[in-house]
Amino acid sequence: MLNKELLDALNEQMNHEFYAAHAYMAMAAYCDNGSYEGFANFYIQQAKEERFHGQKIYDYINDRGEKAVFSAISAPKSDFKNILETFEDGLAQEQDVTRRFYNLSELANKDKDYATISFLNWFLDEQVEEESMFETHIDYLKRIGDDSNTLYLYEKELAARTFNEE
Image 1 (cartoon, rainbow, N blue to C red):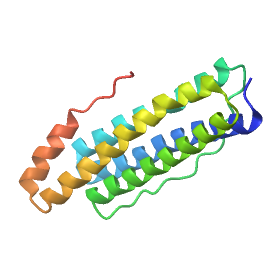
Image 2 (image 1 turned 45 degrees about the horizontal axis):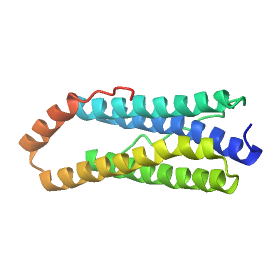
Image 3 (image 1 turned 180 degrees about the horizontal axis):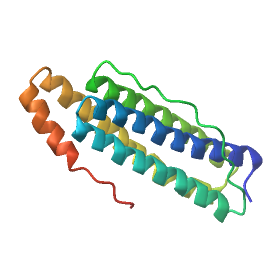
Image 4 (image 1 turned 90 degrees about the vertical axis):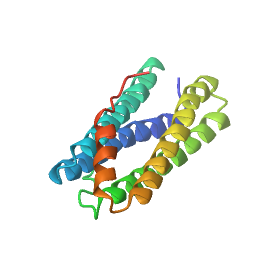
């Protein structure tokens, strides 16, 4: 059985993961609208990953004998200046998620809930990868700048991205 404060925080994080998927789909829509299908694919795959994370938390809550509670998902930002801004916003979103998992970990440690501590460690490791990935894409996009040929090649690389549940 989970402590109520921890359960509420896990439910909040589950909902935030589904919001993150929603936000990445808005980024995909922006990219698709500008005929950047490769970048759109990147964000569609990212949204799949966030939904997987939400499902993982949902399953954990239920495995602990508790009830997952869903809340309304607000509309995400849908207008961007350029592709680079979508990646900068994606990095900011991932940094926020990392802070949220740190807070969850503090609650689990305070309660000495070792099962939840173990569960959250997977997400903490995942967040290192997520932030690093976005930082790398931002670096690449800044380096590419206005070189449309290189941007085209980079987009083709991102078009091949797939998400596989791990």
